[in-house]
Image (cartoon, rainbow, N blue to C red; front, side, top):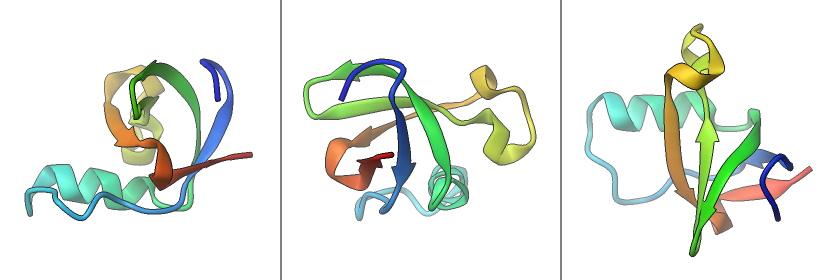
Length: 70
């Protein structure tokens, strides 16, 4: 996996606060996003479009095993 690759969010992390953070991750489930950055076992996705904003307005860091390359 590299920056620019498109991935599908196939799972959300089990340990998330039960607030807007969890809601954002849930809205990303089954959607496709380009990889914005990589750091260790984490992938950064710009996900603004999941909340009807420009992509760059929101980003998440998610474990690599929660996404799959498409």
